[in-house]
Image 1 (cartoon, protein in one colour):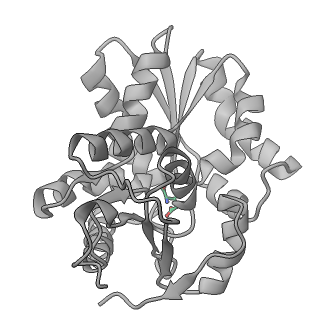
Image 2: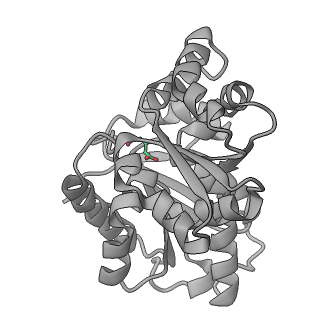
Length: 273
Ligand code: DGL
């Protein structure tokens, strides 16, 4: 049966990222929505997006979205915070399908949990430069102060699996020391990779600071939206997970262990045209 002839509810959630990091969001989706089929695209040939211009990231985001639409998905989750930060409005106005990014869900949770009104945001250079998190937080409350910090080295450290390593602690101290001194009480993990380094980040920033995983927040929003639009998959069949990448599927499979705790991912290499 082709993806087009199956009932809308049974179609996959389409999710894309610049590479492997979006698997932290897949993890959250699998936890919150265990019945759902998932189709993932990781642009491993062109990662990282976080150090590229907004214009190039937008171009890639359109190609990634078109690929998922060709797979016949029912909703698109933009797992990549960098894409969510610079291209979500363009994607939403161009494509006629529900599209969920990471920024609004993460920002909304931050507004709910901060008691002191001092929120930290960490992300790639492009995400922080876009100021999309401070903007989204200002929309919920003008009184909250946002302290932003790019943490580009966290991405390779997470991919190396150095989630509990002295080098990661050193880098975390360098990046997060200032945020700690600014007295934040909530910190948005505004990049797909950062939940992998959660323990080191929590130890460095202090246990009184609530860490907000934007992927977790987005997964809850996906559930809400599917429910609202009567798109939840109620089938009792084992869900189907398909993974596509634009290069080196072998490395993706290996890293799947770190990001998803699964070593048996079915990964297909595709060429975006
Ligand atoms: N996926 C990216 C993000 O969440 C991190 C990796 C990259 O720079 O492409 O912003």
